[in-house]
Length: 480
Ligand code: TXE
Image: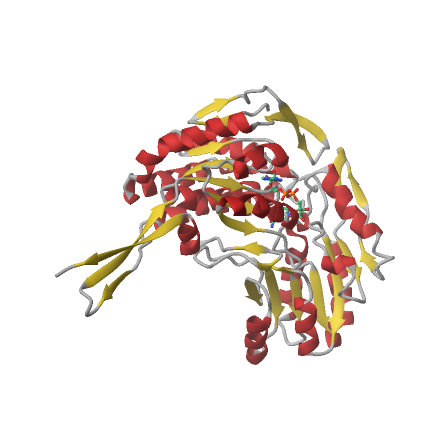
């Protein structure tokens, strides 16, 4: 599978004919190549987007909406093909890609196809001054969308859908680690009748291809999801160029469990919030804090439930935990497990690589539970981004809140309790962009999505995304 860039509605080889290997992490083998595009390829993509902008930004909302709906329908009609491609590229169970990744990608287009027809802006009458103001929210022009490897098509389309719904044209780059479904999206867009040049997909490494996008003087806004370090780098590059920035970065999310919660529901959901997608979701609850009175019981039950998870090839239907996305990432996650003892941690379960029969060279790791004594330890302060969670107990509400907030990230938090006062006090005082109470990863696409502190800047979702991808302009008219 040697894929190409999607520029101006066509599939083009990179100008310098330079390619990178693409791995199937479930078997640890190369299964194709992707372009390692250069500034010249990005310039070509920018020109296609710029040429397409006048017509696309003047298309009626109904016409834009119809095309986005068509893209969502085609994604649903090709669900199996996309789910298989995603599982092969990322290592996640195909069952997960079929239920989460691809359906949500279709929903992203459908949601913004509808949202754009409801998006409006304000007017202000300057009473007594004989003037009226109204605010236009106009598309920005050509914008850059850069996405990571953990939820490849889901996060790629989460940016592209609002950007084009708002009338912009896009230069997009998926992660070089998981390019496949982005490549397949190009064909869908052509079939849906998306005018050529509205969406351009350029493949390649972050520090070359991605860097060329964020440096391009005419790309006016960057929507990025990825690591905090990369986000900081992008901000340093783009801020002096006064580009609009949306940065969805890392997380180290607390999962705070009180004795008065619905125990069985909490336990089942906590297994999911700990290890779904091999723990490679920025929203995973990787720091688990449990009220002392149920701590020992929880520890026993949690370990037992996790030990029942099936680690296997992503294409086996009963697989719960698939392969990690790359050899490098597996080694990074393993390096945190290896320092557990020095960090005062005790491995309660897991911690070892797994050899899956028939996929001996795949990147498999046991779901791992580490009991820690101090929230200041590296395991509780750094984003591991793999199937690793830590456990600690707490005595009081005050202590739990301090532990939850004592980290540089601020993306999401999960709280398990049936106490209303506690729910309100925690929800107001947790320094995160998202709080889930008695659930996890329940998503309403109208809500603002994003984090505080080292988890990024700005919000995606709903009208927040459409406001990000438009420029407000106030028109003031004086009349007699
Ligand atoms: O992300 P990167 P990676 C965290 C997680 C992970 C770490 C690094 O902890 O271990 O980030 O993961 C592109 N200019 N998250 O390496 O490097 C890159 O090509 C422009 C959390 O995958 O941030 C890719 O397309 N673009 C996160 C995208 O940025 C650049 C999900 C993300 O790559 C670039 C993933 C540059 N200079 C990782 N350098 C979440 N919040 O969900 C890289 N890129």
